[in-house]
Image 1 (cartoon, rainbow, N blue to C red):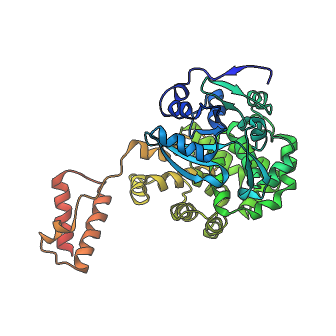
Image 2 (image 1 turned 45 degrees about the vertical axis):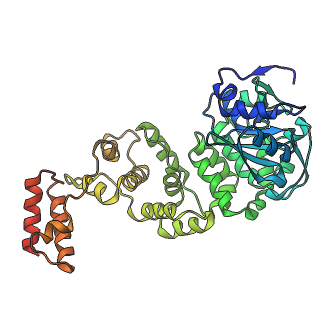
Image 3 (image 1 turned 120 degrees about the horizontal axis):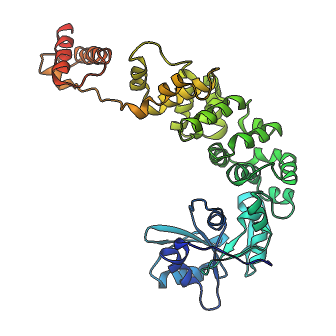
Length: 412
């Protein structure tokens, strides 16, 4: 690398648990560096999440050094050279430098080594192959720095070969472009993804779901998903047709309010029209129960417009809960002809930010003290009282609540 770049103003690197671990690994002829996402994000000024470390030390030596330093070390993937070291409750993945001997997805056969360039060349994208030592100096053996400055997501070496090593890299290519890229997708990378599209069918549904969820909330999600759709890849992932016009409107509305994007809401507006769509996506992506329930709610209950009846919006919020209410309102708005800055829709959608859903103030004991016996009569009295309380506008003053309870007990 001809240029010299250094990460500056990085307390996460030069102090605390990470520096302790790096110092423990950097001795006796061994070297350790922070690799991948932490370096990339530090240079971009983006938040830093997990911090991964690469080292010349073999896994057994990493375990020994961690033990001598008083750190907890777990051989989480020792066959592939990975040890997880926990310091002050923070985990760090430490992986020995390696090269692929044989690759078949996540089950590659590797050989340990000491060559930083060879280790970098086995990674996916140039911007993910940067590394930095404790001094902050950035090492770039594959040309990642120019790509990072250009916000250009580019495969290392031959794109088709990188993809054949792990077909999940097709989805990662689009996800990283949505998160960090600018402008058009890398031409050679896009063509390689199209050529390798059948490999998507070999991936576990859980891995596909994880990548798609991250892509959906990335800053460039709409443009990137459009490119996937134009390439025939999005239909293959979803096993159905995507409505990107509604997704684009939803994202514009979220940004105008502003409200944070939610992956399941965006997936729902894009790919769920009826319950069967939600069921297909549950099976296709191995969604969690809560994710599936959210899509079902979108399919069944999205609303076409703010209610004209006074207090009806609060009733809907009370019945649906804040998350589902917001989903229903945003999906309805995005599927309407209203402008993205429509004041009526905006007031309706943001109701949860202005009004907290109250808790029904009456309990079974309140009716038992009024002479209502346990059993169906008690349940009926509670239901009658709750209905009357909602119709009255969710009163909280004790006198009004007591009056509602008295009337429900007498009605029963």
